[in-house]
Length: 467
Ligand code: UD1
Ligand code: CA
Image (cartoon, rainbow, N blue to C red; front, side):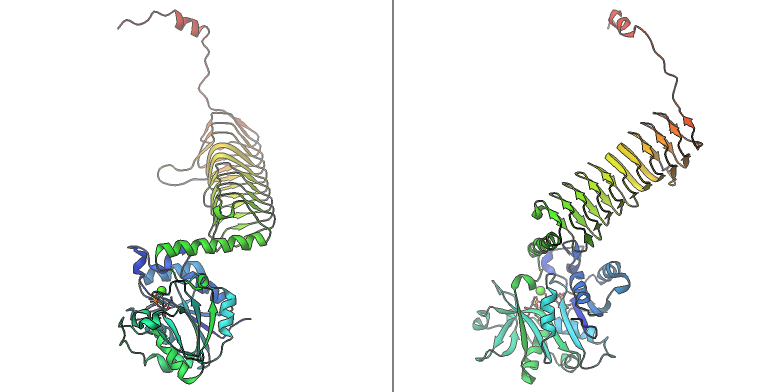
């Protein structure tokens, strides 16, 4: 089911006092690596809603920038609510941008602090008719929520906010989840009639329920509490995070991925793909827009961010990779550090304590031990010896090292960039290369080696120094 003509409004202007943050607006705190405000936007797109408007207020510049970064060309529209005068006012700010929309357009109202809502629940809400419908839930502790008040026949009469409720109303455990579907025409007619004469002095969106109920029956969709639980403090943030991660882990396991100790593995919501028969060891973290092929082994403690790993690669324990590409059947780690712009071709070996940055290694190239390779272009089948360093920085600018196909770099080599080692050339161990090496040549730079025979005996016979 797609809802191409529908519009979604995401309420995200609130400060979120209870997060106790001095730097971060509430909706930019993350659940499974994805900002709270991004969740309803992704969900709206998922159910086929093309036009999304996010109402921002507190920290609006940061929120807008985060949305632009995450969604690019598909970023939602922004409606600025200057003062947080309540949820009714927030929706009015978005509706003000919809002058061109037809009265019968369906408007979904989502909350920027409810990350775990499922698409199936939203579809159920969509199929409700009437001027307004909403999602209700049974809260284990309904304190703080708006209560759903029904008549003797079970028809919805209104929603009463906790602070305005009588003791009898507070005893109700059916509460408003804060997610609605309404006709645009209904919102246009009724929103400006809201009053702030209530316990919080706010314009309550929830007051629309009584108005809708006066005209036609108000339908509700009853959702499990965990799905619609809001995130208001960092305890609830952690609970939502754990739940989201469990859901994500189960989804990948069902898709053919083996997770060892799944509760210790953190797969972000925005991870794009993990192929079948891939294995994730305990403590692995897959972050951002990472993509993993099939038959890949990612062993204990690896942390991959915005990284692509192709089929059959093996990542040994504690490999760290950020904005990197690892080619098919490559073997990396343990304890390798691939920084941004590292691109490993097919069957490349990068071993322990090797750091790479903006470096490409061609097919079959090897750098097995203790090296720094930065701003380098390394050809196929090159062997980089232990302790090789590309000296890419002269204190002012970065320079490129090129090592052509089949070259052999001896251990403990310093390559002072910009420099090029020609195809098939050999660099002797301990060399400091400062000039381009022609193809096929040998380059060695060492102080002459001296041998002093009998040194140990001479030392033993020497008189102790008097003091
Ligand atoms: C709201 C509902 C309550 C429901 C609960 C579910 C109202 C009056 N009450 O209460 O019935 O049980 O959600 O979680 O709607 N926001 C704005 N601008 C504002 C005020 C709020 O954008 O001026 C945003 C907030 O950032 C938040 C959402 O609207 O994302 C809900 O606001 P919040 O203050 O959390 O409402 P609740 O008191 O939780
Ligand atoms: Ca809330």
